[in-house]
Length: 463
Image (tube, rainbow, N blue to C red; front, side):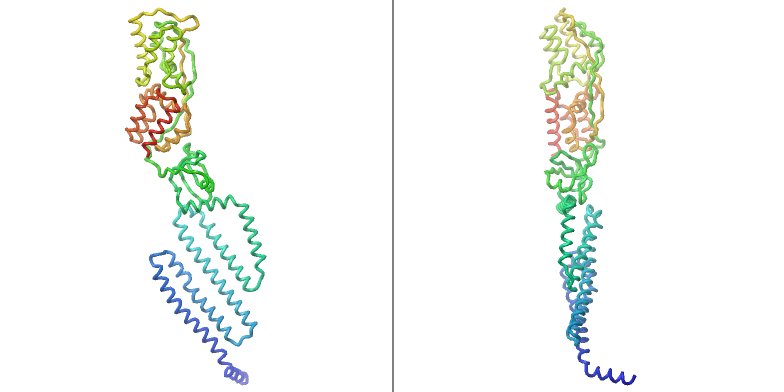
């Protein structure tokens, strides 16, 4: 025991410098690290205060590892100045380098996770994709750290890099559509050209309100109530009209209807004017509506308003051009109900007969046959909650739907005005626009030109 202590003391007296020098280097590096950390973090704090909210995350995450890195540096320098043989120094250097790479990788992963969560939390449309984004970044950093560790220990990294490149290339080809949509979604999120609540219209014809924007697609609520998913890549590649935020909502949405007509012979007929007046007084309203509107609806491309059936029959079968002209000149738009229109037609014929009794009779088989129009009203899937939706729906609905809301609602349903004006005044409170549509004489237009005129009036109001 005594001999061992003697030998140890003798070795220490001979080699103390080789022990003290590395130890002093290690301690000096530690002290320098404490001083450098203090100076660096003070300067960083002064620079970043009030400029970037992520600065505190950097300080909190790196403050303790900063000292560890200086301890690793001190140990490396101490080993280099020690009497350790060269192979031992190389091995120790690799161990210390591995510790540094592992520590740095952990810090970068932790810091990037915190910063990503900070910014993703501010973008609602990215929150659902937070786990995917964070885990992808973590894996990418871990892979880079692992490659550096392999390189430190001299392991061949080229085959691994080539393998990773091949895997990434195959994945990119397999998921190219998904990646395209993801990048497009990122562009939409950054640029904010399209936001939830905007009303947009694509060049392909789809239109509606944006209800959600994810990384892969944009969800639109169409005017028929259906949800349309549009891939983000397609959205960026096509022409999109963004009308912005919704207009004033109506207190009650406008439901578009359409109608179908079935003709039915009543069995009633007239061969002269006296019989014509007599039957006119007795027939139901659908008969009067049919004989004043069937030509208009069947030949909607003609303008101005064609003559009613009574005027045509008087001219063609009785040869009375004067009375025919009087009947044809009756302006249907002047009458709010079919009853009023019927009374006017009767009045014109009676007044004519009182001044000039006419005994002309139509040839057998050429009598005036009274036909009744049976109307079937059908709902469409289209609903408008504001004027912008109303305009877009109006572009799409059939002419039968337009005819129903303009002509049939006014006369057969005895509303006295078209459905559009009623809704705009009662549910949107826009009396001026409602009056403009109410005073628009639809009998002076073809149905298509009437549609265009109404759309123009509403679009002026929207702008």
